[in-house]
Length: 219
Image (cartoon, rainbow, N blue to C red; front, side, top):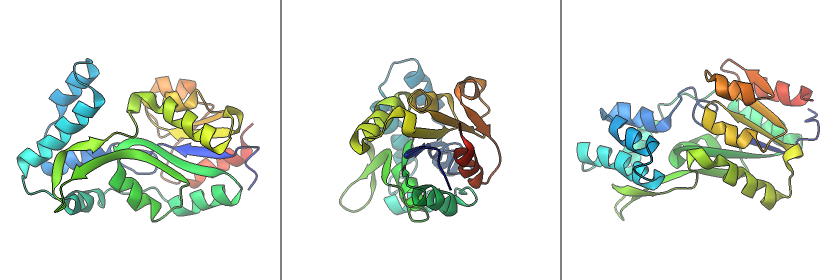
C-alpha cells in the first residue's frame, strides 16, 4: 500500500476504533450513574478537565465503594471494536507510517486495543487506583479533548514528521484540533457537520479498511 507520503496516522479512539462513541459514557451507563451535571460544569468552564475526570470517577466510587480496576476493565471489554482493526493498522505500519492513538477516553480501553493492533504511541486518560487495585477518584490527564492539537504536535516533533506527512482520523468536533495539523483528515462515522466540513475525506461503516483505502488514494 502506498500512503502518498504520509508518515504518521493518528486515530481518535472512541467512535473510531470502537463502535461506541464514548468509553466514559459506556461505564457510566453500566454503573447506572448520570454525569450530566459534571458535564454541564465542565462545558461552562466552572471546573477543569481534571476536576471533571475526578467527579466522573467519584460517581462510580459512590455507587460501588469497592469498585476495582478489574471491574472497570470488564465493563470496557464489552465495548465492540471496529472490523479489521488489526489488519488496517498493520497495513499502515507495513507501509512505513507510524500510528498513534490520541483520545480523551480511558487508557485501559486503549491497552485492550493495543493487544490487537500495534500503535507506536498511545495517549489516553488514566484512572488511578490504590495499592490494592481499588479505584480512587483521581487520574492522569494525557489528553484534554479540547486540546488534542498540542498532543499531535508533540508527536510530530518527537518523530520528526511534518503536518504535510500527517493524517488523522476522528468523529467529533474535538478532533478538528488534530485535523488542523494534518494534510489528510478523515471524518469517520461523524454526525457532526462542523467536523465533516473541516475534513478532507469522510467515511462511514464499521470496517477500518475503509481508512486504508482512503489513505492509499489520498491526494
